[in-house]
Length: 82
Image 1 (cartoon, rainbow, N blue to C red):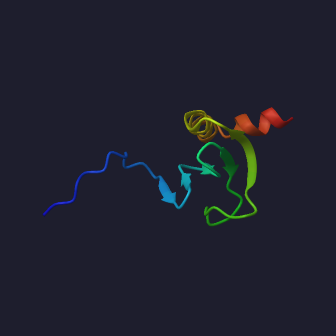
Image 2: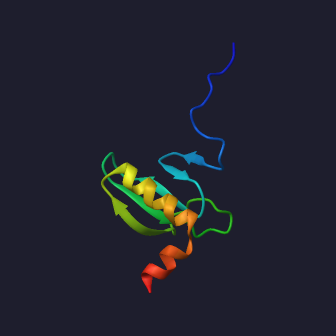
């Protein structure tokens, strides 16, 4: 019996409980309606309690779109804080 194929792309993304990582920034689902984009602070690249919250969203799609834009252009977040 073969395993069904995953619909996820083979990109370097990992799902860890209620967080999904696809780079330096990741989305964490706090509730079914609250999603936060966090900036990974650890040297190992693993989510941790000291990761800063960059922005919160009520729409999952918006959170993932924002996370992708930050991971595609990491300077974007740094410049927006200045």
